Image (cartoon, rainbow, N blue to C red; front, top):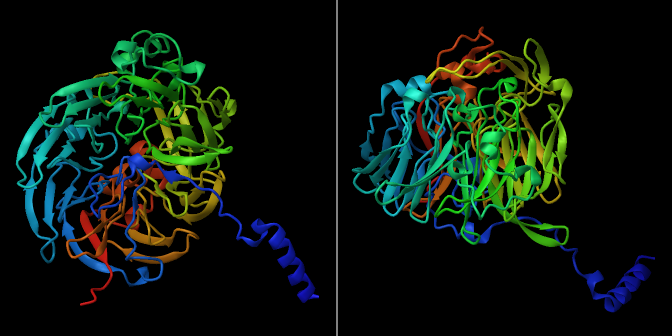
Length: 603
């Protein structure tokens, strides 16, 4: 019988050759080619490339040998606040920026133990610590044209000579007396340093600014609120949805003059497509948190802009959370991919949002192709793809004088600033995120310059299933989870994917982990001295070997209970986050240490 079946198959295969071939592999997304050049072994920007993939093509360390990974060297930063930065590696030198006081260290990778070449101390104003919403963090430096660029907590951007450590220029961009600070990592595009401000919880007005990389002079500034001329909305503006069209919506969608203290800060991530010549960035939450004090859509907060990098002029905008009810912001990473979609290839961007949905958006036009929950959301019921409008659930709507319970996700979102990674080998997005819900009570907020302007009492706790974090692998083409790892604590670190079929991430209690990119199987882990909220990187050392590096130092909003010595019995501390992680002080301690790992030397 088997012989007859074999003969029949061979006859059919001759008549229909396609039957004899292996089935075609499923189509998958690839990084935007112009935004993701071949890997040169360096790591010169926190997101690795303009496409923000955080993917390394190095594969010396792989799923078969990662179990042998060991510490190559360490470096103490001398600071014990939240270390959210990605180290940079450029031509044999590693650059590490600390939380306040924002010291920049250059380490010589050509010498054993990587001794310090130089340290630059910017000496930011000490009073800036008083207007830091959620710890004194910094998300990393950027490198371009022989210079390292950093932001400081007191709202300056500084260029430093990468070889000598000497200051090249320094530009003041914000006013700490109004509550403005800076924590984001710059991005350098076409000779311009792109930066934005922090301080949405202090009633500041958000903006993104382009500085001349050679001189530090302001080239353009685009605000997130106010009239079109301030937002840089002009003749080139062509949004996809009608809800984003109209004159001076940054004024008319607010109560009178409320836009002047309306938030929309730009402290997150920027991506760039050289082919389309567009930058993409988000805008933060409107202020105050109490939505009853700001009726209207509150443009242009809580959304995504596409802009011309030369002029700042907006091409399109999509408001992810109109009239943001829950501090969901819109500042997360934007991963640029080309992906198969309904029989054609679409130039898209992928963003796992704080509101719990993973968005796939056409990066040419701003059309939402998909918005699927990667977290058990109950604050909203979905996104209408025809209108782009998110559907809020009325029974979870905050009201003055009432405590609304069990809102999922919580204020820092299903995922906050901590960036995902994307692997072209698997076509999967790897998302480190929270699994938290909250109770919310709106209260009246009064604006006083330089003081908190919030208007809500929040209490956070574990979400469905009882675990507080998750690491989710998401297939954007299939629009579903590939696999998921449940973590006891919220995840606040970034992710790194490599060509060795590995994904790295860290936990709040200090475990640095490597899992299999295809399956999520835990392959290796190492206990560091403090909680990990930094962004891991991979690089090729001067010796030709592959290394993995990450900063360990608990803090940020999630780890403020440890970094800020907060009372674990005060459920309202850190805007309610302490209630969700009251056990964290028993599980980790303050720290500030760089860990660099490699396989054992063959010599």
